[in-house]
Amino acid sequence: MGSFSIWHWLIIVIFIGAIYGIYRFAKRTPPASSSASGPVGVGGWLLLLVAGLMFLGPLMGAGRINADIMSAESQYPNLLTVPAWGTFKSATWWSFLVVCCLSFYAGLGLAKGRDISVVKRAKILLWVIGPVASIVMGLFIPLAVFGKIESDPQFFGALIASVIVSAIWTAYLSKSRRVKATYAPTRPEDSA
Image (cartoon, rainbow, N blue to C red; front, side, top):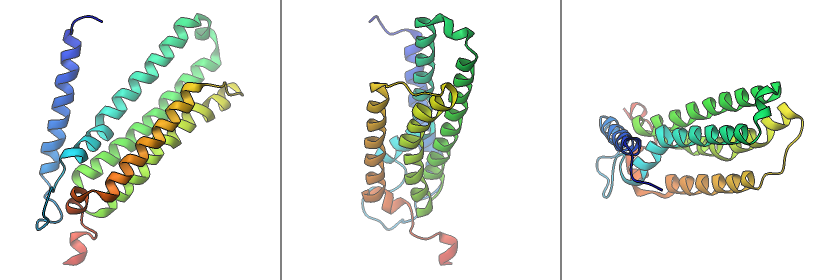
């Protein structure tokens, strides 16, 4: 461990800027319920969820995948000559791109939308980009490319962690007073 480099500071500034940008973007759309008491709008834990869906999750996932691939290639340099390894990397990155797009879509819906349908969509997508994506990328892609699955304790730990995280955020979206005050049960166009 050393001192903070310019890259550490740059990451911190980008993180703070992303959260502030999402906050300002979400403030453009007023909450669905202006008469609600308590917290209203995209802020607090909801802002953290939106920032995580739109930026933090995809960036951390890309870093993890890149580190895992680079680690495997440095431990086993012959992998670079195996055609199936290139296929595996391509399939992993393309699957991850789909996961990133779904994650961004869920976060954007929560930041911009004000009816309950965006919350329902976010709950479903939390499970798709979490446990379902872990299973696809950790089991199905290796099975399809290599024809077998290696026992990996890290995979099962990551799968359990993704289930827990998805369950916590789903519970938050279901029970939060801020979420209930920010997103209307029906669309405003339907009540007019």
